[in-house]
Length: 499
Image (tube, rainbow, N blue to C red; front, side):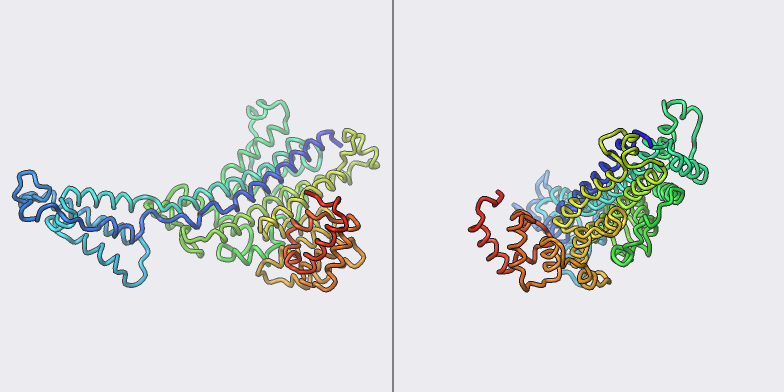
């Protein structure tokens, strides 16, 4: 067993932690819903407000340098003004208008004015011309909301691809000489036609670093290459169910307008990203709109932030599942093939008890905290997905806290699954008070809840901070029994209160 295993585990777990932190940041409402388009019909109409001229049009035209004076022979200017008016009309057609709009009709009437009438409306002809050019520039500005969504989506998919590359490349770099990993890598190289050129190999001190670099470069070709390599490597590693299809009744249902399975959804999002980057009209974009992407979900600027959050949680669920899936296979295979007892195995690993069994326990324990943070941020999809995956893969189905937190996440979603039935089947009768409180709160069963709270506090099973902060206890904190129990405990045990 390689001494680099602890180093690998540290790096791999840090990658998962980074994905969780980034997911929370990505799902933070940065004001996308409040990004108003720089051009709106009310704003354009206001920019066309008439101006009372200093002198009448007739008197002003008599002045030598009048801003109203237009010679009848000045055909170029008249044609130019008409051209500009027509161009603005065309740009206005891209703004949303519902039925008859009085403001829209008024704006169009101004854009039909002659040169003389334009001068009269705006006070001078130069002012009228300048104002129309400003309106054109305003209409050409990309919609702030589209820009924000476009940058958001491009960044999200880039991080998704990066996370999948990390999961494979870290494994090869740190543990590439283990037989089962080298076989998986070699088979993937062959089947995915990954180039391993002699001069590239010679640039690296270690062959496994050269192989990892080749994988990274191949996956950087695009999302299709990324998915092909990740799927192939997973199959040869013996990894199952990493595609997120285990949450088909949840996230897949929510994103059905993008596709019926994980790969379809990802490819569709990549298509949207590609259209944004290339701003192609064939993909339903218009250059002036900053990249409006049309799909079953409508133009990108119409995608509300709640939908964008679900997309982010889906992609991070996929990449985190994949990262944890590789780690799961590695830790189990290293343990199974080491041929050592636990103490011997620890010695080979580099002492300090950094065995695969301890590593799995460490990962699960740390990521249980991650699910709590996700629940506090109300990222129900990702929290439920992560809790389920950890419980099934890392705690072999016995993770009671993860099971309860997953049930709470599911209870907050309108997904077609019997979350209440699942929660009722969780047996906590002979468990610590914290588990009984969680189940009661999730199911809103308040009979005797004050006694359980007292038991939890007096036995030291929970702190006041935990009662106040655990997300799944939110409904409990609204109950009178909770308030009374807290008051009584505060009087009886003032020294145990944490600040």
